[in-house]
Image (cartoon, rainbow over all chains, first blue to last red; front, side):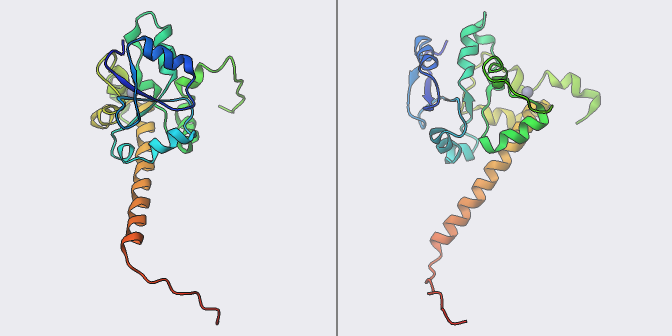
Length: 120
Length: 80
Ligand SMILES: [Zn+2]
């Protein structure tokens, strides 16, 4: 599925998601050369560097939550998963976005492990 | 948003329907920006990110100006 694609992984991404990427034909690259930027934590220093890059400023770098990969792994039809639902915005924006549109899709996967009691 | 067409347009947001295409971190933001029918979800994210980016740009320009303007630092005088 990811044949010929280069992926950059933030240190916050667990090794099994990285392995899945490679198993599906993807390669690992540095952030500048990558086609895909994956992170699990918007406030991790690796990811912060992306948010402060010229690429990001010029709309050439969208960070995606690496749960996209687990969604792909669990999907019956692998390329039916909408990448666009896994945008990972900078941490400082997430609260405001959440207030307007509710939880992020990648947060809904975490419900079993993290119980949230935020007012809706 | 226009109520009359928002339901119809909800399903036409390029960020939502673009599946299995050659989308990636490099072209996604441009695709969203060029989409006239952003869904609420993507609109909110795009607006927030755009604001973040413009603030970043501003602060970079400020930093550059400070660096490029040769200005002798005056010693703060203790007489006041
Ligand atoms: Zn959308």
